Image 1 (tube, rainbow, N blue to C red):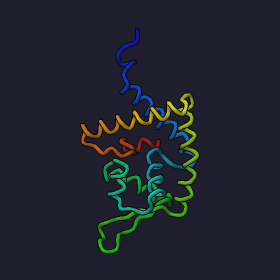
Image 2 (cartoon, rainbow, N blue to C red):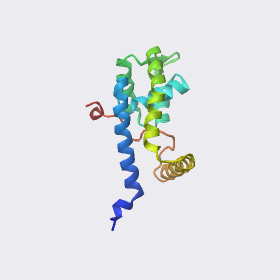
Image 3 (cartoon, helix red, strand yellow):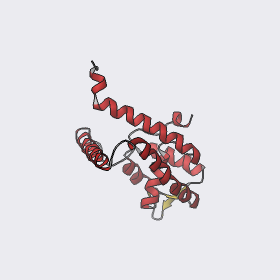
Image 4 (cartoon, rainbow, N blue to C red):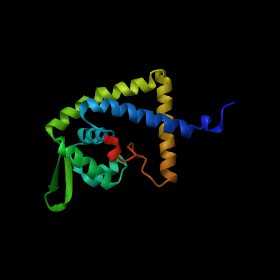
Length: 162
C-alpha cells in the first residue's frame, strides 16, 4: 500500500520541479547560463528594457536576487544597466546584442525540455495540466500574499553555479 507522501500532489510537484530545474540546468550549460538566468533573458527579450524593480516583480523574486543575476549576466556581456535620465537611482536593464542572440537560442532549448517533460501527455492533457497549475498558483498566491505571475520562486544561488 502506498504511503501518504507518495500520494501527495505537493510532493509530486516538488519532485517534478526539481527534476525540471536540473534538466534545464543541463541544457543551459551549452549556452553558459545557469538556472534562473534564462528567465531574465526571456522577460527582457519579450518586453524590452525595464527598471530592475519591475524585473524583480515580473520574475516574482526579491530585488537583491535580480541584482545578483543581472551582475552575472552583465559580466558575460548579455545585459547592460543604465540609469534612467532624470532619476539616477532608477536603474534600467536591457539585453545587449549578444544577450539577444543568446535569448533566441533559449527558445528551442526550453521547448526540448518541455517536450521531454510532457512527452506522454496528449494536447488535451497538456491543456488540462496548464489550467490546473494556473489555479494552484492563483490559490497559493492569494493565501501566501504572493504574486501569481509566472516566475522562479527559488532565487539563483552560488550553489547553482557549481
